[in-house]
Length: 337
Ligand code: SAM
Ligand code: DTB
Ligand code: SF4
Image (cartoon, rainbow, N blue to C red; front, side):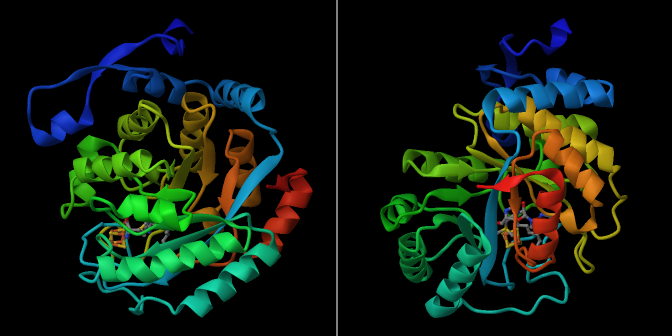
């Protein structure tokens, strides 16, 4: 077990230097990719036991944070993210919709609160928000916050000063995913770099907004690359407060449609690796729950997932019905927070 010792500091090359193609910068890291691969290689029940132990040391093991998502601006996005049904260049069934009027957003937030969500996450299919787009979103954030909900937004890359405006409006969390390991990233997205994403995450941190950052599993990446994504997240100066682990939802018309399905135990292993390496973070079992039997979801919770998206829709694709989730929580003795 010595290669799994969490306290060992090892040097790895910073992703930013790979991307910029400059001399590698050696930094002290908490977790090497090799150590995380070694977690993945543990016998399944040893890995789960270890993840469950870490989970119990840090959280109420039966409490699950519940967030509801709303797409406030849908489709027509200029980016080429290979998984995304909202990219304008792919021919999917998604219908483009302009920014939603504020009263509709507030009605959805009210319904989410009544249904038991504690956080409301507003997503927009933008590369980055223009100032004229940001203004109405700031108003949405302050009004949702005034309802007593935690607020989260995912609006793409942020420019100088925008994170501070979001903070002033009352934003609690900003979601911006790294999506995958640096070395697989270019196979999935070419219209913005890994470093662009790290820069947005830095602005969010500087503005003192909680970071929600994770990725997508099942895009054809290798196990090393899954471990590479987890290493990026776990080695951040401050790991994200919230780590969404999405299972790719394959959508016809996107380049990643038809990629080989990932074995579901490998997904659970990824959740466990996230829990062990980021003991204080909420790990969110995110996209993909609709395709998972409840037994698989239960294993994800046992492996340390303690947050979900709740409500029958994610952004454009489906999610389990709220009633189905209530029944699952009752069967497992979980309670929402
Ligand atoms: N446009 C903004 C951006 O990309 O930063 C915000 C919204 S974007 C849809 C938010 C995240 O949803 C992506 O970074 C990706 O991780 C996730 N996502 C999008 N499509 C997905 C899919 N088909 N399956 C799983 N996750 C997906
Ligand atoms: C995240 O990591 N997953 C959510 C949220 N952040 C914005 C989005 C999942 C999107 C799944 C595809 C869709 O519904 O369009
Ligand atoms: Fe656009 Fe975001 Fe979809 Fe990428 S993930 S295509 S940036 S909406």
